[in-house]
Length: 285
Image (cartoon, rainbow, N blue to C red; front, side, top):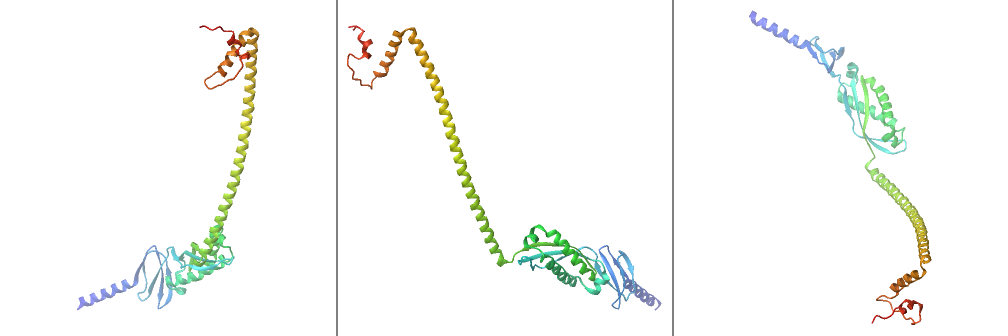
């Protein structure tokens, strides 16, 4: 009987110990409740003890990510943008988080409202091209500041908000595409027109340069030809001065060679001067 009582006492003691002990790892933080009333917050990792009737509520203390569904936002230039964004956040006050949100799912629902409201206000102050291209980083920093201020009331710290995609609604995409296509076609026609104009200018300049080069070459050739002819005349004159008869005879022979060939027909009188050297020759027969 005594052994049974001892065993029962040990079992009860073990149960009390098991119900009183709890552990916290590096990724967790705990709120201890007693009949729904918060007693204390524990953030130190390790083995801890509590009264066995008290309950332990554990929350993640790591950086969490919230990915929202795409939402439509109206920009300053009255254009609708479908914005797909995500946020990084963490629980900084687990007790306040438990009292206001209770679960991470409810926190996501609240974050959706907070971040969308901040995005809608901030993006509504800017033009579409500023949101998409030029001012995205600066306006997102302001979104983080505004959203973090609102989230502090729930024991949440928002560290970053980023836009994954910012697209036009499907009904507007085709109109934008057609406008972009028309603009590119206009630019292409402009470039072709400018290219054709430049081509005409280049061809005209090339033709002018060609004519100038040919004229200069012709001028130079005529000068060289004139100098050659002048030199030839000097040589002929010098030869004529040395022996006029022989010079006349040689020139006559050259004339015979040009006149009397297989394809030339010449009608002359026997008294022509060209036959002077032929007449002086006596027949050999």
